[in-house]
Amino acid sequence: MSSSGHPFDRLTPQAVLDALDACGLRGDGRLLQLNSYENRVFQVCLEDGGVVVAKFYRPERWSDAQIAEEHAFAADLVAAEVPVVAPLRLAPVHGPAGATLATVQIEGQDFRVAAYPRRSGHGPELDDAGTLRWLGRFIGRLHAVGEQRPFTQRRTLDAATFGHSAVRRLLALDAVPPAQLPAWRDAAERALVLVDAALAACPAQALRIHGDCHPGNILWRDPQAGASGPDQGPHLVDLDDAVMGPAVQDLWMLLSGEPEAMAAQLAAVLQGYRQFRRFDLRELALVEPLRTLRMLHHSAWLAERWCDPAFPAAFPWFGNAGYWGQQAQQLREQIDAMGQPPLDPFALDLFD
Image 1 (tube, helix red, strand yellow):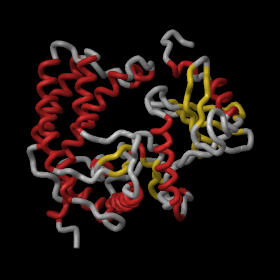
Image 2 (cartoon, helix red, strand yellow):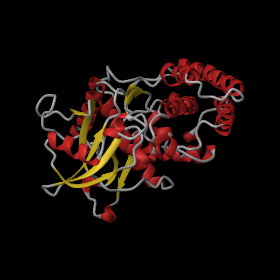
Image 3 (cartoon, one colour):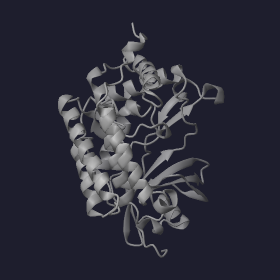
Image 4 (cartoon, rainbow, N blue to C red):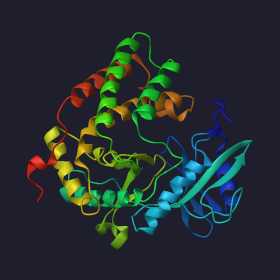
């Protein structure tokens, strides 16, 4: 292992190939590490001419039961013909035959492994109204499946888990420099008061959602590039952060710009969404509270992963005085935003 001693250091090319061979996927030696921080993900060329994407889960992040729920959600979506890149069946290692999750041991460390078919594509063009309507239809279909049954093992997106706990973890890690701590802590605590109030005022239905539905997690396949039928348009490539949460969580990350621009984007998304599922308009009041929770959770995520060498290399700006000063300012801006009326796509007169 390298001097860092991180568990992921064990995933040398040969160790990855040996682990996949034990799962029934025999590589031909060609291996490419893909962009992923939370887990380690590799594109692997197989001896039979196929190509798979292998995912080695971060140790001790999820339990087997939580990963099983992620995979079951993907299977439910596939059964409903919602485009998602679902895990493949693997040869048994330490689990039942035909399972989509295997456990392999590398230098005394257990790793959970899943493999997926390779899919090509690019991010969606979010400045196109037709694309936004298509994404709305796609997410509406996803949520229609998600509400059929709940997760029982995975997390719930709420203020306690993604807000208050995130602040406590950051304080326990002494992540915020002393000079910036009073301003950041004051802003975080005041912001969470408003988040708590907003969530209490809008007890939205919790359902199985993607949870991290930003454009980077949506794979777009163009008809012009040869995709056709169900292979064209949006596909989900990652359900690693799937949670129980409100539907609007999977919509607001598609929006950007000034409020009027976001309202127009939201109008297009909802035009598509409501073809497949009713949307509770009261949830629009949760957009800024959910954005606030994401900010706090993201800071805690970075701080907790800092011992992983991939994180200082990818996020060199994290943790210095400038970062925490900026976070305090952004939280104050969120306090102001949460005091404003929610987005109103219907004011644009785009709905019948």
